[in-house]
Each structure stands twice: as C-alpha cells, then as structure tokens.
Picture 1 (cartoon, rainbow, N blue to C red):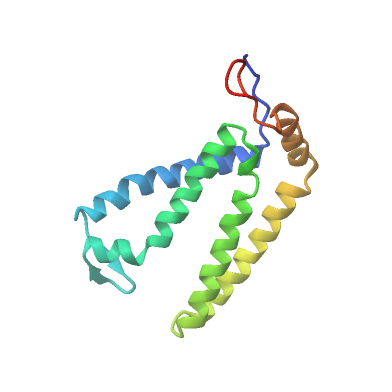
Picture 2 (cartoon, rainbow, N blue to C red):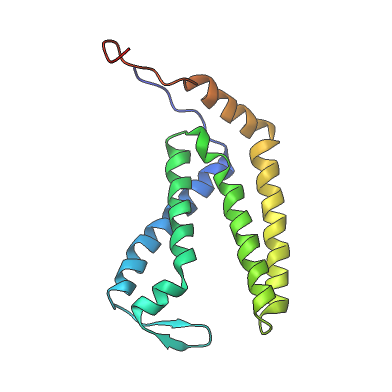
Length: 157
C-alpha cells in the first residue's frame, strides 16, 4: 500500500531540517573528539582531552539524539514526534536554570537564557497543540495510523 505524504507545516519543515543538521554534525564531531581529533576546551579556553570533554557534554550527546529523533519522526510522519520539540525546550530550561543555580559567574546570563527558553517552550506548546494547521496535520496522521497493531494473516492467534 502506497500512502501519500501530508503537507507538513512550514515551521515543522524548518525544525526538521535544523534538527537533522545539528544531529548530523554532532554525529561526526562527538566521535572524532572522543578519538582525540581536534582541540576542545571547557569554559574559558581550559584545554580538555577528548574523554573529559565527552564526559562534560553528555547532555549534548543526548540532545543530539533527541534532535535526530525529531528529524526522523517528522520526516516519517510519526505521532510520537509531536511532543519532542517541547521536550527539547523543557530540557533547555532545566539545563539553564540548573546552571544559574550552581554557577555564580554565569547566573545572570543563565537566568536570561532560562527566560528565553521558557518563551520558546510556551511557543512550542502553543504551536504543536493549539495552532489549527498543526493540530489538523497530526489529526490526519492519527487517522491514517492504526491505533491497534495489525497482525498479518496467518501469524499467531
């Protein structure tokens, strides 16, 4: 059975492309850094070997995986991808707020970043759950996807 692709809302298309780009760059850079290629630093040009750097930015690797899931889920028209963009902004709010709490040097900047991330989180929640075109897009996907897994004929009972 061939299914036709739905027309994805424009901002979702941009988000899919940006997510794929960021996840792709991270998929190249993170392993190369782990292998010792390139020079990396933590904070104010404090030199860090590959393994220490990777340990310090584990969250970046997880976020890169989330961005990859966003890109795949949007491209494959999966319902489960809908909450991933708000999740990205929720993680960003959590990270910036936690950094503001533990780092006196960066407190003012991280408070501003937290506020900005909260604004983007609110915008993402509105976009994915209230914007009529996006709601209609996901309703069309839900109508197309079976809610119960279909067992092929002749397989188990």
